[in-house]
Length: 128
Image (cartoon, rainbow, N blue to C red; front, top):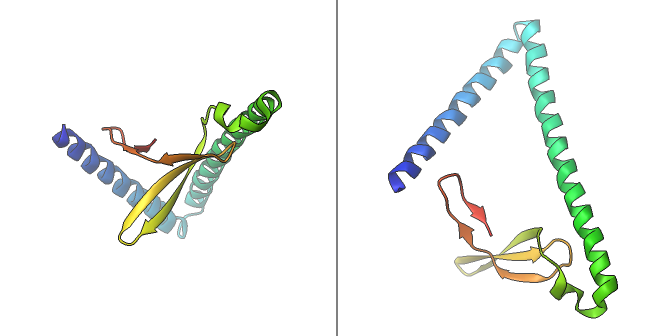
């Protein structure tokens, strides 16, 4: 399994290097050719639009979770944090000497959820 993870890591790195060279080549070529300026501008515009769509969808999910938590607060008053589903969380880090601890906090109710654990898979690492 570790050999497969190593091969996937190397292939991912090679893809990033190739993308950097292609994008860098387009940037350099855009100084000499007006058509490539339009290509470069359209690539940058595409990534900006994708980033805005991702940001809007995450804001919409957070707003829906906060609306759900408002209903929970109306229902349970003082112990609403215990009934929050904690679907969305934020990570924070604190250093204790040489060791760095990663903690989880609920984005909706603000409750401390304990230390975060790093789940490793062949598709990439994910904090849980």
